[in-house]
Length: 363
Ligand code: M6R
Image (cartoon, rainbow, N blue to C red; front, side, top):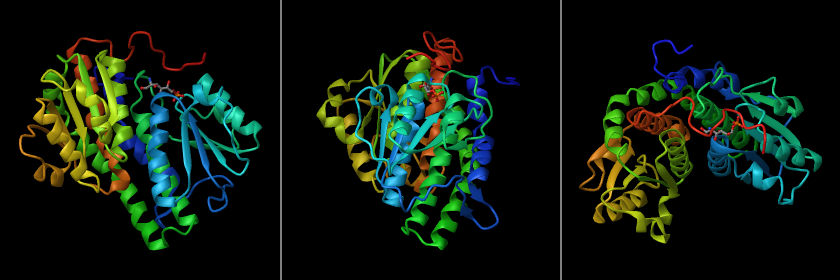
């Protein structure tokens, strides 16, 4: 039930510290501070991972790609299932297929997953619903344990999927000899800190709500980010369009000059996601370019990023400082809350957006 919340989506955003805590507890051993990934998968032997998914689950997969490739030096391909299933992709039986699906019933994801299995690939299902078709047909089930998600806009399932993939990246890095045990222990402690930091970032709700009042007047909104904040920009835009019906686009910030900068004017809010990481300076310079053209920037960063913000950055949301491994988890709440409060401001039906279904069981 919704308890004191107005909408399931609001409740599910607030459920995330607990949801992620359950996910992480399932994939790390708190006594040894080591990862534990169920299933007979040798990450040192597989040559590649193929992720298939739709919508927000696809974006979680993109984040998985960024983490796994950088940390474990293991190639990961991620594709929207509706394209993958029909284009006759070239696959190798030595690769691992991962289907990501909250419901475990998405028709395109299921068909893409079966296609991988027919090619002889090992298969793992990253699902919330363990009794689902995708789970039943998988060699290995990786439940996310975040509890039922009712709101059509996915929130806590997304962060739980990302939390599991973060643990998976650490496990794969360790098995492939890219990190030693001490580093694995450190990263597991970082994962265990995530629920507390997600809770802190949910506490930014009032600041985000104030920004939402302005954003709700916009016709178009751009989201920009680099590295893992690029998939997060896609997620921010998807969330906003699905529940507030404002046209939104997520772009890799480096693509700004290759097209989207033409859209920048005083009426278009530009949400820039940029923690103080190795990409920060580049994102900050994109921000200056946008501001020079009159763009209204909503800058979502961390304390160090706020101190180093280019002059003129006014609307700042400051998420807690964290290790880059969990930055996507910590930056999720502000973008979800922004979409949520814009939709509420517009009087939209947040939990049942028009034309959308929670589970898409037809293609
Ligand atoms: O149940 P699934 O995770 O397979 O669903 C995939 C998408 O339909 C889903 O994530 C959709 O994009 C959400 N409405 C996004 O908030």
